[in-house]
Image (tube, rainbow, N blue to C red):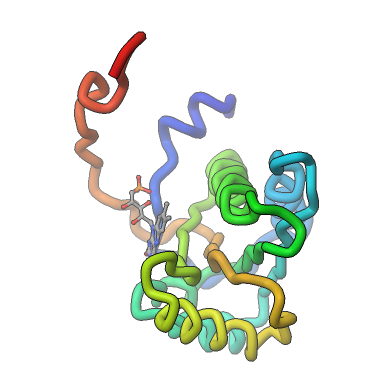
Length: 173
Ligand SMILES: Cc1cc2nc3c(=O)[nH]c(=O)nc-3n(C[C@H](O)[C@H](O)[C@H](O)COP(=O)(O)O)c2cc1C
């Protein structure tokens, strides 16, 4: 699958078959996040890969919006380091997109569980603490997302996109 096909086909998959993922495939997907660019090429994000079913079930309640993680083949936590780079959030986010597309390229599905909450520090603290405690993540790391990756259960209904012309401006806004 070329990169355009992966981009066109990609959806958020929230229905997974609780099957084990091939280790080499999972490694390659995580490597795609690791190879994603960062501002000033600084190592401002890290990844924690989880395949333990009990831990996936535990993490699936970090927020009310990621129940799908309980059945995923793997969870990939992406943390950011504000002490290393002012671009930590962008860096972590870009790596999540690479992971998402790599999963698509492997015929797998991925979902994004938002942990970091930029508008509500209290809610962010609650979510991040939950994940931090479960995985022993140092206190200087921010926890951006837990992505779920796995074999696709149900596919989502076709998506209606906002017209391209409404979103993309040429030469001027
Ligand atoms: C920054 C961001 C935060 C998201 N947070 C969640 C989340 O907490 N839970 C969830 O199930 N999906 C989450 N999503 C997935 C989006 O809801 C989904 O990608 C969007 O509805 C578009 O659907 P599509 O991915 O199928 O194109 C998030 C996506 C992004 C980019």
